[in-house]
Structure formats: structure tokens, C-alpha cells
Length: 299
Image 1 (cartoon, rainbow, N blue to C red):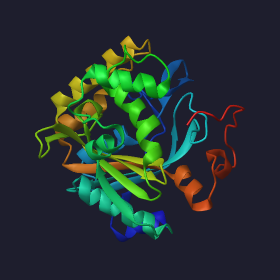
Image 2 (image 1 turned 45 degrees about the vertical axis):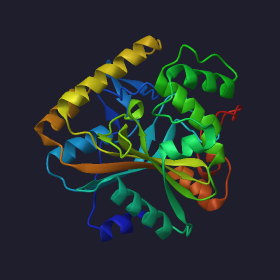
Image 3 (image 1 turned 180 degrees about the vertical axis):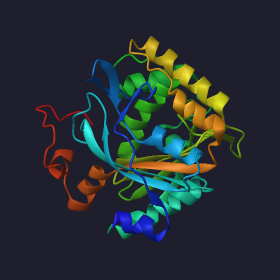
Image 4 (image 1 turned 180 degrees about the horizontal axis):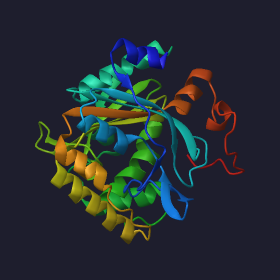
């Protein structure tokens, strides 16, 4: 059904490598390293970098449906090997892509209403603070109380992540929810804009189904200088956290320099969607060969 959905929309399926020279630089994503004939390689955490190289070379709108890998993620909603659907639409903004995502979910058998919420609105409704205006100390205090540990040495993005995960997500309604206009510090690889209140926000959205995070989407960054700057910032964050610094993917930077077209992309965890469709509460229940852990408390 997924493939027919994209076939009807003339979106091309692509097959990209699962092994790459580099992994992602994101602080919160650790790639699985492998040895190939004495050379260090990485199992890819998503097909994003390869797909963007195809987009820059003129592929048009594309999608990939296949395996992805992340280190040290085993729990109720996490497995180190999982199935990911990722697609990019040329000329689409975030609202057009959210609409297409909702149509796909409906076509797959989940006939539920969806809501589109701004990050700041739902955050302020639950927490009582504007996430764009709150001071770092205020966010550190709330994060420390919510997690019952000291967050006073953490940065703004980590505090917001913790608060959202511990306090906002549990208060989301039972339905398909799109949350967009994320704080600038959580822009990842998304373009930025100024909202109607004068806040600089990331053109990023996340999708939740019955309070379970299902997908993450961006209006894709296509400024090579900004891309290099974000890779450098990621390296600094990883160094501060005591993590291995992941080198920037020069092939991706070359592709962006060559000309990544205006597009929006989104990645959805297929196994999590299957959990919802089948009424399961553990991701291992929809995987015939899951990595089972004795400790499934990690969300």
C-alpha cells in the first residue's frame, strides 16, 4: 500500500546504501560502526544523506523504504535495527508535506482526525512558559524537576527535549498530531523563518499518533555555509558530551553546494506505525527478529 501511494503520486522509489563512510553528526544519534577490510564504516541511521545527493543530481521527488540502524537503542519504542520510510517532495513546504502525511496514514487504515499545533502553543498550554522567551535557567529548573535530576549544566535544546518528552507528550490527545515551528535551537537540518510573533523558528514538524512519536520532517536546509556551520556546532556538542566526534559528510556538503532544490522531507518509523495498527505496546511484537531486552523501561 505504501508503494502504491507513492506510485500514484509519481514519487520514485530509490535504493541507497546501508553502509557509509560517515554517520550523522547529531548529538542524540549514535551510528553503529563496522569494520570492512580494515576500514571503519557506519551503518546508516537514515537514508537522508544519500537521498539528498540524489535530489541534488536531479532525481525529482523520491522515497526510500528500508532498514536503518542506531546504536544502543532498545526499549518499548526502540530497536537498533528498524524499518524507516523517508520521502522528499520537491516544491513542498511543511504544510503540504503534513497534509500528504495525513493522507498516507488514512490510506493505510487509520481513519482518525488530525490536528496541527504550534510547538509554542502546546508547550505554553502545558508548562505555562513560552519556550522561545523562557530563560535557560527557567528551562533548567523545569527540566530538573520533571526528570528528578540536575539539569542545571545542560543546554537549552536538551532542556526543551526533556521537558517536552516528560511533560508535554503525555498530555497530547489520542489522535494524529502534527507539531511544527520548533525553537531555533532544535532546527537540526531544517530551514529557519521568523514567525508572526517575531520568533526565529525551525521549519520542522514532528508527528505523534496517540502520544507516540511517529515521524520527523523538515523544510530542508539548502545553504551550504549554514550546513557546514551546523555540522561544526554538532561536533562541539558531541565533544562537550564526551562522545565521538563524527566527521562532516563531504559528499553531502558537495551536493548541497552543487544545488539541493527547495524541498521538504519526512522520515517515519514503520514499526511504530504497525504497533498502532495492530494494537501492540512493544515494538518487538511487530518484529519477527527483534533484539529483545530484559529492560524495556526506556521509551
